[in-house]
Length: 205
Image 1 (tube, helix red, strand yellow):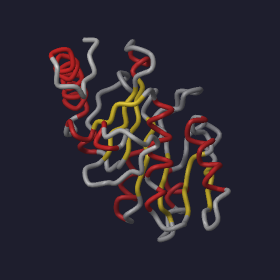
Image 2 (spheres, one colour; image 1 turned 90 degrees about the vertical axis):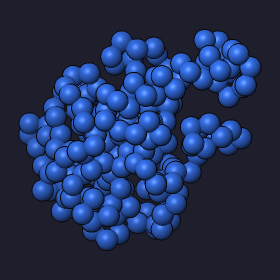
Image 3 (cartoon, rainbow, N blue to C red; image 1 turned 60 degrees about the horizontal axis):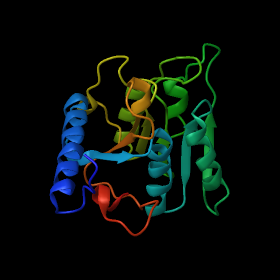
Image 4 (tube, rainbow, N blue to C red; image 1 turned 60 degrees about the vertical axis):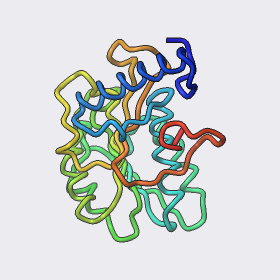
């Protein structure tokens, strides 16, 4: 469909159906509500959307992140590290390239606003302990971003059992079109939009 999915004419309605079908399919596969799926231009935008959109609504504090994240996580976090009142704490992996969950969680405190940990590392393929970290953060009311770009299609997903607030994906990792990604946003969370002037994506994009 080549129409504008926000338009009411026949071509727009056809495009909207394609978009809704894609959203419903991804939501069913991930076991999340369709309304939590926000389509993006890729994993980079999805990560940036969470990193810039969530802290913007919070009081200054701390962000805890693994030192082996993708540049689309590490580079935008450098901007937060330069803002007054904000601190970014980097957690290094062990000799096997794995982040120790207990070490990571030891940095979570009442001043922590966001925790970022990828599910699968994009260079080494190591699987990180996102479930333990997300559960700990949920207990302490800290938002989590899980970069799952490298994990999609590699093993079964059920995000309903993962306590993450934001999970990012990219279509090209599973043979989908380039320039397409998604950010899963937990219901009720407010994100400041990176782009202004449009109401698409629940006013997030």
